[in-house]
Length: 50
Image (cartoon, rainbow, N blue to C red; front, side):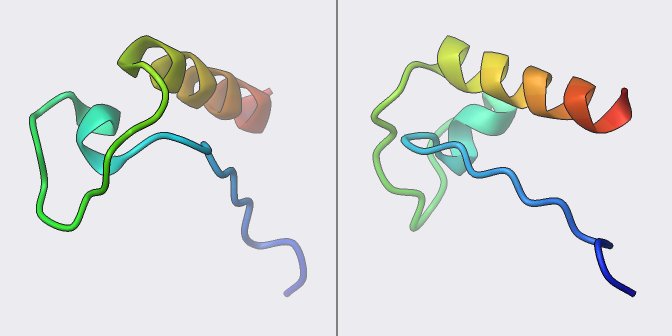
């Protein structure tokens, strides 16, 4: 069952910015903007789908 996982790391992002719902415990401080994180997430999803 090789290749059943695709992992994409967004360096500098955090959990709260992924969903834009505020600070989460043990989240850490993001070093990139929410927009940058959303753009990277969008690209990763589109690359995965297409």
